[in-house]
Image 1 (cartoon, rainbow, N blue to C red):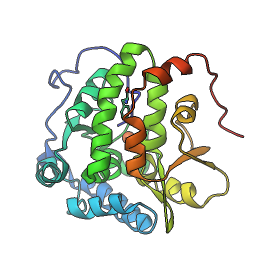
Image 2 (cartoon, rainbow, N blue to C red; image 1 turned 90 degrees about the vertical axis):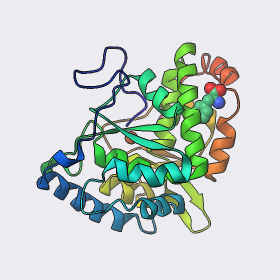
Image 3 (cartoon, protein in one colour; image 1 turned 180 degrees about the vertical axis):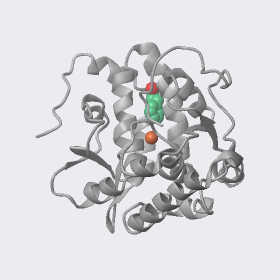
Image 4 (cartoon, rainbow, N blue to C red; image 1 turned 180 degrees about the horizontal axis):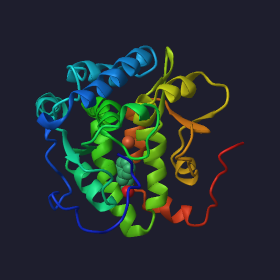
Length: 267
Ligand code: PHE
Ligand code: FE
């Protein structure tokens, strides 16, 4: 699920007022489960030594291979026990205010559907593989769990202040495409990287992208591209440092941003 979904409108028919639906786990077909297994096997192998410890610990704790698409009822027992988060199923992208309300209440909205077998490497809307395999392991980490909840609260505030485009960049460059510096080297924590075979290699090993130290104002001034491998990654020194810097009141930063131009993607 991404931060800049959509605006307005009622939930689609069959969805509840908060846009959730039943996962209807019993209705996934054998072919759909097979897509998960294939993606899971490829990605879990690639992420050893590439994803950060918090991610890999979460992946283990939630037992996400389990012979196919995970049943949210099963994941939620362990996830709630670890950090109080839950995964809820939604039909696809949800309006921003609905998304923020879920996050602020420690509910992560995950696409119910899975991509087709001929779309393993790219799709436009987040599906259950991106949302659950990519995002949910990090939600088992107490620090990251707090960060995501705070983001939900900050989202409502940014909307009211007309600064959502700036805040959405923070989501993009952390929750989706964040890198973490560790003593062993750079590691992945962003879900957009963790759920992509090509990007999980490219983000760490390619000489092409820029990798800059995380700076809150720089991040909020930097646009992003949604249709290709990233040109730029921001590297946090620790998840705690990320949480600490975002706990400050963004009001003054938003005021400054109004007068500052966007930064270019390339140097
Ligand atoms: N501190 C931010 C604000 O004042 C809220 C926020 C927290 C945003 C964490 C993102 C992440 O608006
Ligand atoms: Fe996402």
